[in-house]
Length: 304
Image 1: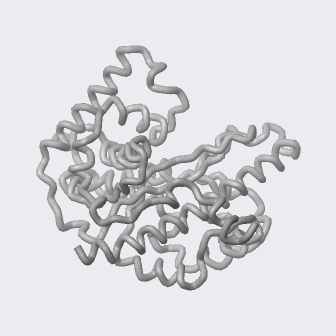
Image 2: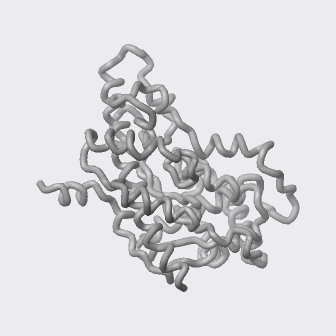
């Protein structure tokens, strides 16, 4: 199998995104089209971290949650977006893979990240410098060493993407509603809802009523919020390739419950390690897909 064929084999649906300027809209417009009954289970599973379907809740509890989401969406729809504060930012779809347990279960997540158009030049430089999809772990280790450590403070680096949503929890809803969001038409409806669910979760993290609650500044609650979005348990594993950045694309799932109860049980530990490596490969390729799509979108957006 040729290199090109192997790389194509490692791609998933978000590598097939169609880049079209007309698919950029505002958060306000996108949320207006959302149905609370569809948004509820996706927010609960993907963002709140529930492993039980909301359908399993008793009727009263589910109805209460549904009413809260309906009320929040209604309130968001009644507000006038206040644009200008985040003119360079674009909310984009973000695909990543997590390790659920040591039994071979990988979870595909589709969520959102915030990218800055001003960073497109740096992304393009990285891509032109050789950052591309890889087909095997040996190539991944080389790429991780080469591309992950440099400039790791950049918001668009893999380790920082989850934190890019944090500001949405602390800014006025009117500002968030005015933000631009890219929802490619090539997303299926459920993927689209997952992306919007990430945004909705961030906006309502401190409460469902923007008018009555006090918006705290980043600091008092930002740390806790950031930890929820960026849980990293892969740090404890020894790097198979050595060097900084070797686990830069490790899965973001909390793995405490997945680790073998007996630390010496290599039967499970070795298998879990391989599972994490598979997720790492997929996450690296999804990151490359994201950078390529964004650098293709920015010129179209700026020309509009």
